[in-house]
Image (cartoon, rainbow, N blue to C red; front, side, top):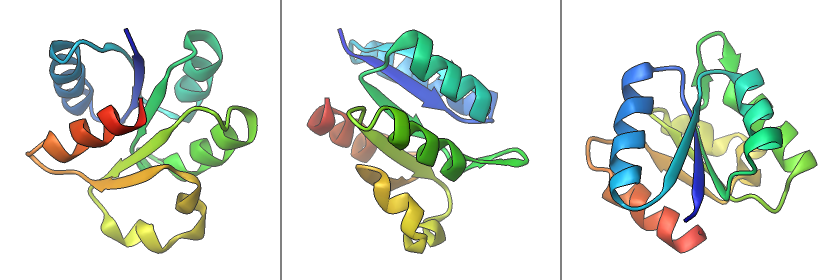
Length: 115
């Protein structure tokens, strides 16, 4: 069973993604900020990370840079409501960039592709 780390500051998003992804057969771990994300990468060894960019006052891009530097073998999907960050060259380190939507099918398809 593949383990997915969902990093998002919104509790409802974390709950929804956990529910949806567990129903697809994945094990899901969640984090609400950069430090929890880094700790989860170290302690949980996820097979894939879904990362929001806006994490309250923190930036998911900072987490992405740190994760890629230490664990570049873990695929990262940036999942943000803001498509403008696609132009930020630091986000290019991610394996995919999916704009948040009520339709989770594109995200689920990309997860299947990367795991």
